Image (cartoon, rainbow, N blue to C red):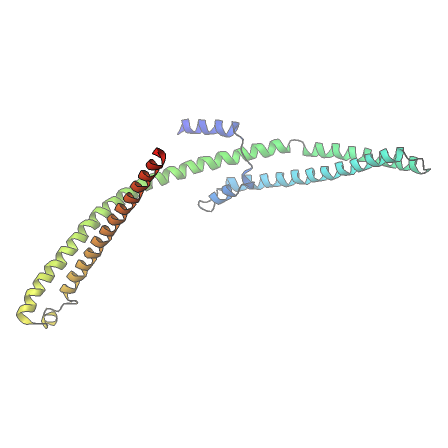
Length: 241
């Protein structure tokens, strides 16, 4: 277990881990098992950081668009000899400077957020992987136990089915004899819930249906083999022609 933990820590530390809270498969895990309070707390911290990062990134994109627009306007104005062009150029330069100051502030605000996101994300993945490991190994143990139980039940079921059929046949033979001696009133005489002969006839009918199904299956298999053999012969004749 300790060796596994060491290998897992190395994998989490070096791997390219996707942001877990943006992964639907990660969320699906917690529909099957209970999410620990520690994971919930880290998840909340991660989502807060993601929101902050997203807001800052969006604002920086908008500022950069505005800055580009101002710079493009300056290029146009520099070629324009109109009297108010110089004032407009100065206004744009001022706005560009303001954009630069805002971008610098946003970069400072962004700071270590990406690093913090990565660290918390890896912490969550470490806990998630350890929990998944424990659950899967518990499941494997129970799966093996259930497989053994199912195997034993199948053997017992098969024995009981054979035993049931034997007793139905036994009742049928006895009923037939008593029917010959006492007539059709034997069902009432022996307080029987059903006619045992009906069970035997039904069982025979089922066996006949199974035999017919197997026979039909064999016939279909033979037909397919004949068709395949004929196709091979045709291909051979074509290649020799």
